[in-house]
Length: 365
Image 1 (cartoon, rainbow, N blue to C red):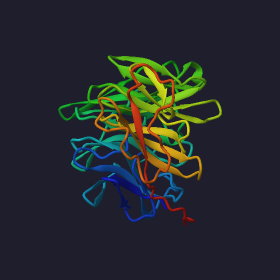
Image 2 (spheres, rainbow, N blue to C red):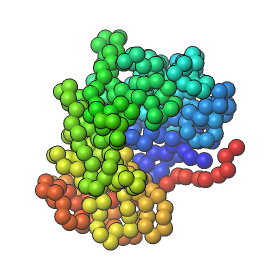
Image 3 (cartoon, rainbow, N blue to C red):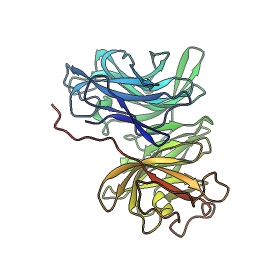
Image 4 (tube, rainbow, N blue to C red):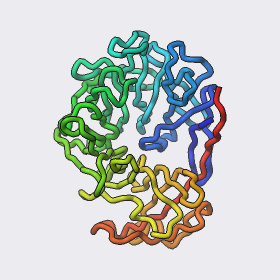
């Protein structure tokens, strides 16, 4: 079983489920909002009548989105269909995600229900428009200025083979409008994952001929190709904070992951911030906040265990001293960075915290 969890003040809190065996908080930008609310998705106890595995746990149970706050998990309604998912909740309490309608999706070769982009406000879903005649979509993120981003396409369940259009939604009064974001020339993997309060949008778009995809930032109507880490083939951005700093993952041709932070026009492998004799290898960067903390997954090279982590800037001009204790969970994480480091990052010797994990493997029914 897998449960959504919240790390708060060094303690691990199990958020529970909506009755089924599994729940999860979204990977991208996995942090509560200013009101302490956490968005996520959970199995229920009801088998999906169409055999869908919407949550992706392999249980084929109906999957519902939820908002958790102060010990209470509240299910969010769909658009009349069986399943839904959330990704982010804004500081205003608006939730971005996707929900099924009751109508069969004619763009799918198997029985799937139409899956529409949604914003939940005060617990009620509002369906967002799509672009280019698309039938389906998903809102991936929402900022505090009623702007949301995500994707639309046909038969979203066929990811990653579907033609996706990266989309910006903006609210004026009670109406949301959709704007298609430009790509780098490809059509298959165009997704906007994150938007900050400055209106900067981050994600990925496909290269011409759909030969791969690169991390991009959309701003002022244009798209900026951030490329990859040296030697890698593809990349994506997961989140961008209000300081225009983005984090994501770059992949080589064999699929090996190399997490990065993009700051001041430079993409840097996060493992450059760890000592050469660190026990840890950072695998993936999934979120960052305005305190420049980065979260994701890391592997202990000695045991093979995979943990969540928090990477916190420290050193000169930072609120955290590099001389402070790192964590009782890590026996050897010296606070010195690898060299060389890009100009402008040399003061940012970061403190690495592996987090305890709440993960129990069982034979699911």
